[in-house]
Length: 386
Image (cartoon, rainbow, N blue to C red; front, side, top):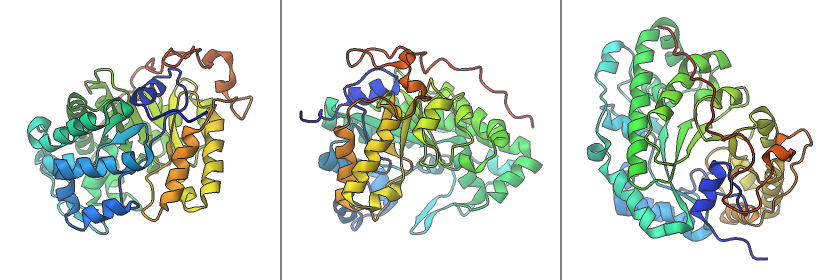
């Protein structure tokens, strides 16, 4: 039997725990430097101009769709674009983003502003509208934003960091300033995601890439309340929210309290273990991007293996982080093909709740899985005291 074609509804249904004909698949950073057609576009324009030029950004967003037919098409942008609209000075360099005027005091926070995305990010709305028109029902268009803790890390550190000493120092010595910054960033993230949904995004993802650097205690004190605020204030209009944390093995239960519909898991935590620990959550992930540097046959084997860990139930197949620039095209294709050809199966471990009758796949695609709804969450955790 030929594999089912790409489908936007398939991705949305899986996010909400509804039954599908096969698990949907897309890939973080699927539009990027591993594609020769992307590199050709980048030869003629800067990264920032690419993000802000609707026709070019739409083109590179569609390049992986034309090659691989994923079930999701994420629009091309960067999590720091809203930070620049807030008034932060952001420079995109070959070594990564730099913020030469870091936020280190209350007066620095006061210089940042909440803004109207319809005016400051109008180009993002045009990109999303163009993608919806182009892909139609063949894929779900995804929007995204940086989660408050990760954006705060960039703003306070002045760029990437290995120790995150500056923001951890602020948390310990000036918690009131950090609380103000996180609240502002949560509101900006909610405004940004709401605008993206209004512009055509059918699902949105919050990238909390650096939250995994926190202990569970500090995650619950700082990152979790902020991302919960962002999610609760997003005008979803039926769009699922995906939460990604890199290095989330010690945080998965706390992540499930955020209000997100889907928890995106990195490769260090098996999906089998994640499903055991948060049985009511839809999951996304989680192939190691480095696995795509192997042979296509090995990529197929490992992709099938991770799908077997969930039985394909309430699972969006993805990587555990963004695809690497040196990834061979044939290995990326093998990843998508393996997911497309996946069949539902009994999860690997009998201990996995996905094997229980309580969340068995319903008879027809689109019907609800018989399990508690993902949206039913514990009470919001208390805000950190300043």
